[in-house]
Length: 177
Image (spheres, one colour):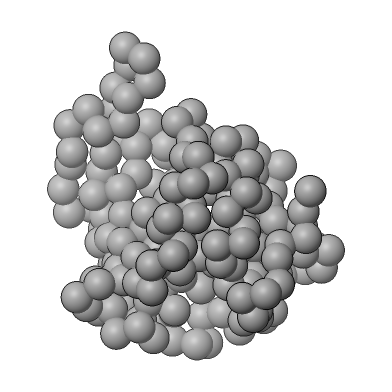
């Protein structure tokens, strides 16, 4: 069994790394400026994760909390880091942090074509509550988004136990070139 992933709260200073990870994992990636803008808002947080103690980011989850709800804005794990528990650790940590920010539930959208992500969300307590037709577009191709919801009443700090979640000061930056 591999070691538990290392997780930490990121910030605006990580926008470049987040944009590079996003570009490597998604078909329609966001630019660095989008991450800077979102992470400038107090209601948005990002949990960054690494498979090793080198703290070289392999994935992240970006979440907005407002009016008692949390929404996953984007979530990605590098292909080389998939199927090792990092995605689940990031999702669990985000749920815990959102619950700590008084969010009672978390929402996300997932492409109907992303079976691996859909399975992860189901295993972690998310249920499908709606559908957005042709939400994801790539050229002439389109896929529906499945809207999923999870109550956060069961989220607690125990969720991230064993995942070395650290809270960095705003002056530190992610160690990845």
